[in-house]
Image (tube, rainbow over all chains, first blue to last red; front, side, top):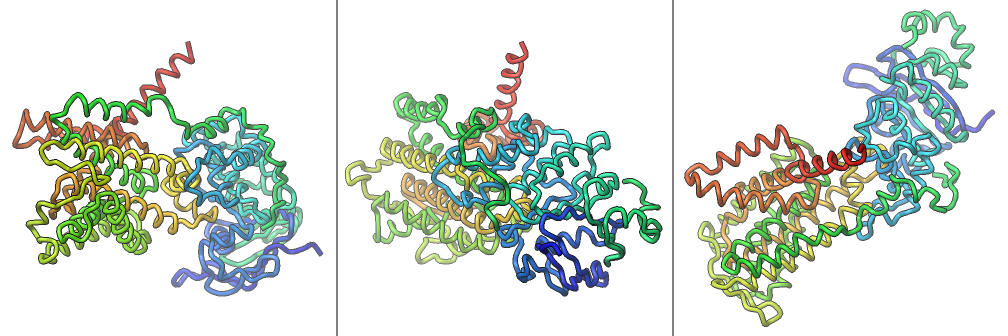
Length: 251
Length: 345
């Protein structure tokens, strides 16, 4: 049995009359490459919001390395090693790619509250940010303003900012969403270069990407876990094909 | 959180030569043209000795606009009530001097900054939970409440009539404030502006300033990278309030009076217009905006005294439609195109 990094116990979330998530028991192993798939409205993004602390659950618990973090705020969870990306880009659009990453790195190393010396003197922050961009093959566009980049590159900056927090758990909400299919390989390339020990949970509609990247897949339908298994098991599961893969096709 | 999450070599700075890295590492360095506003201010002193009263007002307006730039331009705090802090500083100086409690100018300014900072901190704790239109209205309300309080506390503040003929002690006990020859006022204000500017400039290029820019550019993302957003905003708002308080204190000292206009919506709106005109989030936008505004006021009022603000309104529409980053933003665009043109040759 591999070591569990992140775990939920009977996690539920209600929006008024709508039970968006019901009784989710979920385990994410150290170094996992775990995909979360399911039709629209299945509660996938809500689940990520609960894991990251952007939303509180109505019931249930979230455990990180066995420790209950249900009551922890989003900022505290980032410090504990949970980072996320967004389905729609949330970037510092007016700033350069390097600055985008620097803001994240400066926050993590505790440099951000400093008022009396310029950020340019924190060569450690800048150097680390550049190394991170190098890992994601973004150094050539480090000086570009984010708003001037093609969408696919912007998605990579989205991931780079999250990695700047040095997470143990990375929650990726549709990293390839909106990226033209001709470019979607750059997302996969980048994901494959991420450090192995990071536990990655990815929501994605691009099934090629899911089946190539993920080692484990959870199917969610109507706010509940419908099936879980290896990509091969899921692909050959006739019920899953009926509710999702057959109809949704390759998004 | 494990430090080993990503293998990072010790900072050997192998990327320091990269264009993006070296730009960021040098961005805070002083450039030659940054001396020009100060040289111009000194030149103004010798060239226009008869206009030093006007010059003093201009310098105070620049300082006030700079304080707003920190909150609005850098941190993206939408406010229409910044005169609350200008007024708090002005009344602090005014009340202390009028009632004969304290007249030493420099320490008075420190007290003005502290009073304004206290109001900024207390109101910021509440206001900065909100955003957008709600925030705008609440800043407006704070200012209106203060103005009404100053109006009602007639026994202390003089109410509508204000506090006239303030007796301010000489600077360093030597240089007197003479209403007919405002040399002292001008140089004193210039010195205070310089000190405050150095502070603000340091702040905006610091990691803290960078994180404020992050909050302005994407609030949700700052939450998602674990930034204590509200704490940063309250600190920024408090500092901005303190500087606005210093501007207000200078205004009270150099005019030797305080009245309710210090807390007026008119003043808050004017400084906002100045910042938009000059270019917000840009440090020197406050300088250009203040000069442009006062020059416009001067010339338009001469051409069309009864409705000079019509011209200002038209100009603002132009800026809002075609030059979102103000005069300075336009200049930056032209400069960028010029450099791009030269590079492609």
